[in-house]
Length: 111
Image (cartoon, rainbow, N blue to C red; front, side, top):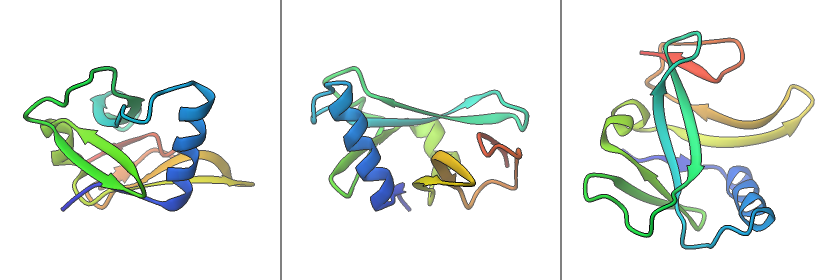
């Protein structure tokens, strides 16, 4: 199993990278941290180090390198990251098959 991103998410990530002058060699780090009303929340950021930790999982989809620490990967395996810019909400959305419950805003979940 892997972590995937939609074409819309990849385009938005590239736009953010360009707006913030982030080098193309910096992967997107996806993590799960404690918090939110459902207990766990997602965290997206560009990795600040040049090297990926040997215990990290590395994926690439639509030209975007994605890094996930092993603990987070246990929660994220099979997840697809999407981006929407519609009337019902703008932003990144995680389609996580492992989540059994999520809050109404979609930013936190539980297993």
